[in-house]
Length: 145
Length: 145
DNA sequence: ATCAAATTTTTTGATTATCAAAATATTTTT
DNA sequence: AAAAATATTTTGATAATCAAAAAATTTGAT
Image (tube, rainbow over all chains, first blue to last red):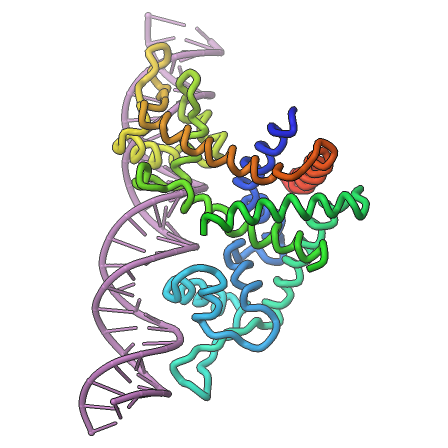
């Protein structure tokens, strides 16, 4: 395969499959009642102070109404805690439960493994080349936003 | 940002956003009645001999029932031609119409631009490094399949 | 040659993700 | 105090998806 063909294969096909693959990797025995999408919401909520609905919806690039539905299910399944803010009772604050934090750690370990896999066998200079080309890729995509 | 952080940003965030970005880039004035998913089905059908439903469903990794619904809409919108095989009348053969081929070309131009963007500024050796690290990435994902 | 089994596709019924717009609750501004 | 603004949820709709049932056709076994 030429460089062009390898890149086409990776950038087109792998990207198309990535969410699917991630879902198989992430949704293991311990966390089989949630989707990759749920996992990304958990990541967006994070482990610092509680966040309000609008903030998380913005991170996820979905409407707040869409997020409400996902949070309903994550609360019911015990991954997310939801409470009204005492300071401004319009605001709903969401945060991870212990179970949510465990799922988040599981997700992070997957990402770490992925990055290790990419950097494997590359010396410092080669890593620079990789980073540069991926930054080119991000720029290309940013131009469309 | 450290190499690790750049890679995390690209491999995690960009991948999450990629379908969204692709949809904005692809679904322009000329092709605004179809989704990125439809575009990928068009790509899977391709421009060679007509393919049957099972073959395309397999390429897309969806059930044939799911594909039936997508093809209903693509036929109605004039992107895809559907006919019974004369040799085996159980089989349905799908192929691209002229409009479908135009959409496919539009999609391919986007992919080409993407690959140009990645290779930009890289000499032959650097391209090799990039290809190697992306192959590492594919291997990592393949292990989960 | 006939009938049962296998194959290919569509249909059905359900779930999940999504949006825009309406509704609700609360706070801020006038 | 009333009006406007803000944050969230609810509603009603669409699209993508699956598994299982149904329909049409072909293949294989006796």
